[in-house]
Amino acid sequence: MTVTVTADMTMSLDGYIAGTDHSVANPAGNGADQIGGWIHAQSSWRERTGLGGGESDHDSEIMREWFEATGAVVMGRLMYDSGVEFWGDNPPFRAPVFVLTNRPGPTLVKEGGTTFTFVTDGIDSALDKAKAVSGGRNVDIAGGAHTVQQYLKARLVDELQLHVIPVLLGGGLRLFDNLGLGSHALEPIRVVDTPGATHLKYRILK
Amino acid sequence: MTVTVTADMTMSLDGYIAGTDHSVANPAGNGADQIGGWIHAQSSWRERTGLGGGESDHDSEIMREWFEATGAVVMGRLMYDSGVEFWGDNPPFRAPVFVLTNRPGPTLVKEGGTTFTFVTDGIDSALDKAKAVSGGRNVDIAGGAHTVQQYLKARLVDELQLHVIPVLLGGGLRLFDNLGLGSHALEPIRVVDTPGATHLKYRILK
Image (tube, rainbow over all chains, first blue to last red; front, side, top):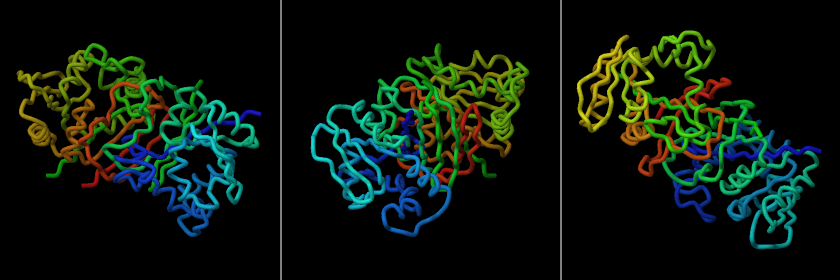
């Protein structure tokens, strides 16, 4: 069974996924609150996080599509540490999540189908584990920047979707900031333009 | 008369306008030939450069729109030095071009309405000179990266259009690589998606 590996990232037009001085305590960084705004306003996200309400529009459909297509998730430790409190007892993933880390720990079982499994033996192992439990659906490399770069560099990503926010941040954490990334030819899959973001989806040619 | 100041740049999805080791002798840099490809294949560009033929499609319309809307151009010295031989005796601009430089020189008068005037007293002066002769049409900041950054930083650009090429270059000359740029809020104007490029146009909010 072939499993598609996706990476979905939200970034400013000038390529930043967080502002300056980002950290676990300040994951969006300074001046970059709008980066996550297109997600948090949407009904599909709010439904998943138990908040209810929100806007039902193209942005929401993009988010819903991601939830429906994704069978397992891989993320870096910093993203996990930054998000776990915010996601709460019933995280929106509702799928197995594999966290790349040097610190082993027991798997955390949350409500709604989300589990967090800590993988200490590298990106190939995490991806294999995710593929094995994705039920044939996509495995998404959810972030952060360094984790996505590692998978891109290893040419393990099949589809890349960028949600481009209409702002120039002028500084912060770059999505693409890795001299060893190498060149990748892309085939455009689609563009969805909404007031909140421009959603650019590409197939990465091997 | 209000003149709109535009900046139009072609970049890879990861934000590079040229590959590594770019120079006057190798303006596209290594591995980045496709950056200019969407322009050079188009009938509107080929018509302007006397080549004829080429593809008439949305990409060509974007280029034609730029030619029709632009009454004067500002560019950096490196862009001029890199392009002047390629543009030949009848450059495609057919409008006054102001070149930012430290080296004064006489204005060059080419065929078809293009002139190259060398401006040594700064970006405000070059923009004022360009506005004065644009006939109410746009003044375009044509590049390169450093020149566009200077005008963005001074908050002198009204509209920013990026032509995003479907490739990850992984390294090279960044369009946005300037810690002093500051944050700019953008209002999306439109997205035109073509096989050659995704054309993203924004108004910069002041």
